[in-house]
Every structure is written in C-alpha cells, then in structure tokens.
Length: 150
Image (cartoon, rainbow, N blue to C red; front, side, top):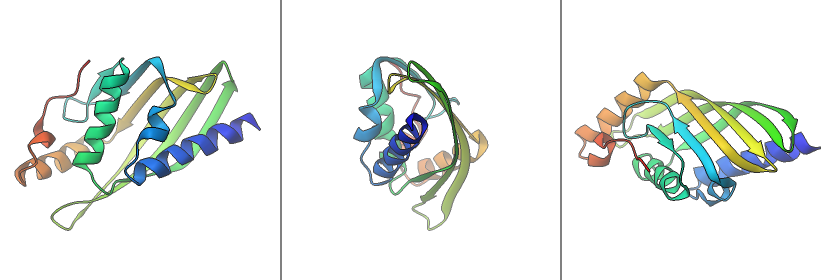
C-alpha cells in the first residue's frame, strides 16, 4: 500500500509539472533537501535551498514550455523513514522551430516520511545541450545561462 501511494504521488507531481505547475513537486521537498541535475549547462544544478530548487523548476518551465515528462518505469524500495525511488523518464518538448526535443532520463529520489531529501536526475546530456543551444540561437538567452546556484 505504501509503495502505491508513493508511485501515485510521484505520478501526480509529473502530471502537474506537465501542466506548468511545479507546486505538487516543490511541496514534497524537505527544507534541507538536496537537488542535483547532472551537467554544466543552464539546467545543471547542485542545490540545497528551497528557493534555489524553486528557481530550477521555474527555469525548466520557462525554457521548455509544454514539456511532458512521463515516468516509464518506477521502482520503490524501503520503509517510510528511508525510501528509495528510481524512475526511468521519457521527456518530450515541442521546440519553437517545430521539431520535438526527446530525451530519456533516470531519477533517483530518497524520501523520509514522504518528503524528498535527495533528488538526483541524469538525462542524456548531449541531447539536452543540443536543445539548449538551439534555444539560445533562437534568442532564448536563459538557455545559455550558468547553472542556478544557492
């Protein structure tokens, strides 16, 4: 039962993010959570404050309006005080030039009593950097910005 609740909560968070609303995800982060997204680019992050984590989610929605992140496979292990969640992701974004950015990723979450204490995301960096470069060439300056820091 607990694992099903965790899965449903994560799926709901992705659905809300796909609708442009990051609050369902942000509300699950513990105040001392660590958020990490691999890469030295505009989406790269190694964050430990709620405000910086919020900035990252706001940035992804600005850079990739219409983003659809779909959990393909999810594994939940552990107890409520120490839960590990692995999620295989499919990412799809309509790009301004009419093409579609598609990528895959892997997310590892650690939860404690339903709160995210660690969120680690790894996406195909070459594909992501190509998409960011495409946006930058089309005048989206934030696509070439430095990673958000806290």
